[in-house]
Figure 1 (tube, rainbow, N blue to C red):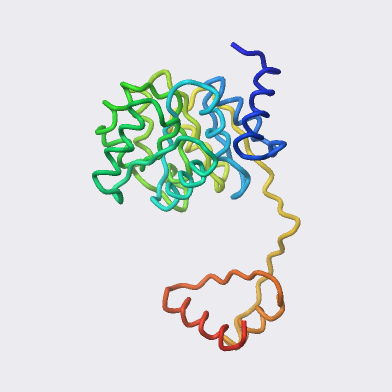
Figure 2: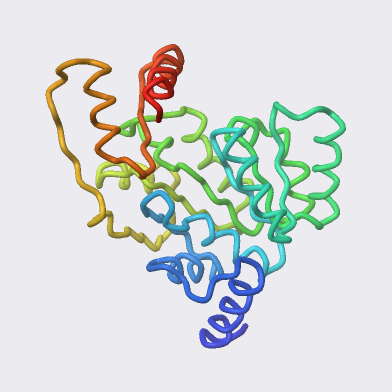
Length: 259
């Protein structure tokens, strides 16, 4: 087994060669090491903090498959496309694929060519994949958007709570839960629901000094919205609306105003 210093050098080499980064962000090193040494972990970091790297990078340093439970097809596609672009052998299996694509991706897993497999929690707990996964050997399970496990969270999905059943089928695999949104109560619920064993609990700093929150009373409707956007002339602005219809109407109004 390589020493911690040797692991650090290997991590740095893969980080540079595959992702083009010179250094890791805070907590990424700890998350990667927990994965490398097969220690369960819970990682809570802000969106964009690089949580996915903590299970993607180790998959290139060790034998075996890393299975990622992801709640949305769009998230799977984004992750897999990005990995393939960087030369990382990754595939997904989901209901939006045709039979030919699913067969090809299963073959990639079965042959050991794929290092990362992205699947929905529904497919993962359904049991249909167990035979395939048992033949290839799963080294680690990564649970993305892990707040979906918690009944105290804002996006509870019952299938997520059944992921703990995989521990009986794959007793040697480590489990790594990742999320950007988890109160202390939700964090404890994730730990309990997954049955994480002596986990590394890594919670990042959510202070964003470049962000300011202000609340103003709504006065003037769309005119007020136009005024707010004009205050940020030359900058990027994101507007959240309640419906597609509202979104299209607001976009049309802003275009009419020359924005």
